[in-house]
Image (cartoon, rainbow, N blue to C red):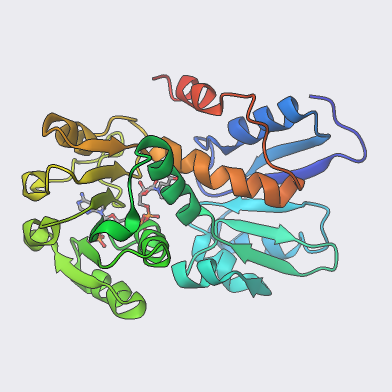
Length: 280
Ligand code: NAP
């Protein structure tokens, strides 16, 4: 990497940040495109996040991707927010404009829909109900994305049903308790795991995927491991699946455009690089 006084700087902020794949993706794209730029990881204590982000006003850092646990705080501190960030109540992108203002955006929904488009190209979000498992930030963004994409019904299933109800009321979806998952799966076009269950070391999600139609597509936002117990169960039942790594790459593409002013080059296989980094 060759840097200069004119290098364009962007990065990712979260806590912890050490396992982030984003520096690998963005720096590979920068190198392949021959852009004089760099993408760096930032980690701050939660109580320092707001002061840190506000100190970047003015554009010496072009922008930040924002990950756990700062996505809500990132939206709150911005001067302007895109409709999709407001709908998701979370920002995974902050752009620091030269005039000192901060723009918040959310590209997770684009990443989610892009993952379906890439791995199950015949998937039509308008063709039937979509089920989202979970009621955290990722789930809310997914509900917003599918409503925007024209899903005729979005059903939210969560361990704590009250959290699902809050999102359902805000965005126009239906809430279900985990014990009602079979009813939520009835006639589903797609099922998305947006809980953190299935992460390496965490417990698996215990839901009756047998109640989904054989045509349902099953997606997991978790990508470590790439083949989660949830996706493995779906594949054993013959369901087609979409993985969380495709979503991660899908949200990074518009982030790169926002930070570096051009689309990332198609010539570099960032999925292969990420798989290598995940040691898969
Ligand atoms: P979050 O806000 O912490 O929400 C976690 C959700 O998981 C809650 O709904 C929680 O239920 C549920 N949950 C946790 N453990 C569970 C278990 N054992 N059984 C059932 N439900 C459980 O997290 P988030 O930001 O929404 O992220 C969710 C997952 O998506 C994370 O693994 C994250 O890494 C992933 N993600 C991936 C991408 C990507 O690009 N691939 C993007 C965004 C997020 P309660 O409400 O009952 O506590």
